Length: 136
Image 1 (cartoon, rainbow, N blue to C red):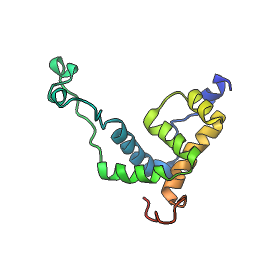
Image 2: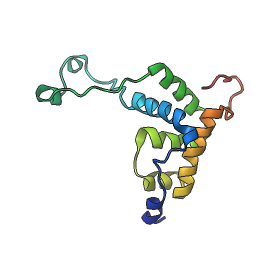
Image 3: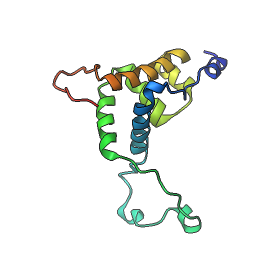
């Protein structure tokens, strides 16, 4: 794999038919990343973050936790390469080279996995477990 190939593929491009699911996935990504550390001592939870001592806090984007949990459930039952690709695109956001290497695919295949995962989430026809019938 050559890095020039990654430059030709726009991983941030969203097809118009995926705008709605993209907004929900962005919400899900914020929910998953902003949940905070559960191991934090309760005494430290009471304190202000260092930046808040001197800077005015910036308003955070509101996260719809209920919708994020629905998305998490739906993502969790996607087929494996799609599940990993969609988590990379919305949660981890590491370099495309690293993720393509981890999945053993080319850049164009990684981009296709993300697009296909969005479509699978819209259609909801990817269930691996018959007892899990409700999706998005």
